[in-house]
Amino acid sequence: MSAKDSKAGKVTTLHHLQLAMPPGEEDAARSFYGGLLGLDEVPKPEHLARRGGCWFRGPALELHLGVETEFRSARKAHPAFLVEGLQPLRESLERVGTEIVDDTQLDGHERFYAYDPFGNRLELIEKRTHAG
Image (tube, rainbow, N blue to C red; front, top):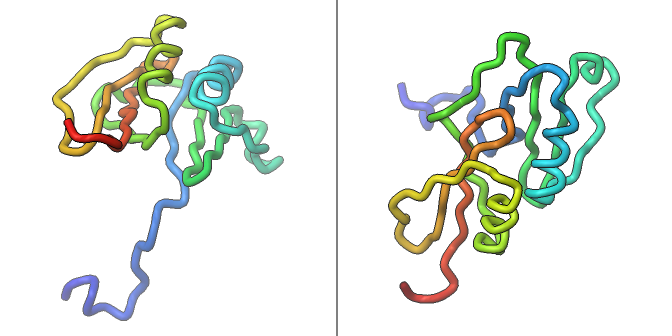
């Protein structure tokens, strides 16, 4: 039976994405995700706040950074964030020493990978507004 045939529920959209971070690195998360990427920090519910980590929100996304005691960065799996102003963002990231990796461009888009302060891979991608 396919999901379309089922009377059960179905996934409709993404509510939030969670990435892991090491304990005690909330200030680094705020500087990177809030300062450099321009996301707004939102308060975590009180019962979750004691666990550490940070939550951020943008116009069309919510990102949760959760603490993992035995943290290991995600070097392959990654979120892809659609951005406006890819080149100025890249320059800001380069100025602070963020690891950036170029890859083959996707049709109609410009993109690169950047690594957050904890080594998690992020794809930053922008739709091209001109031919090329």
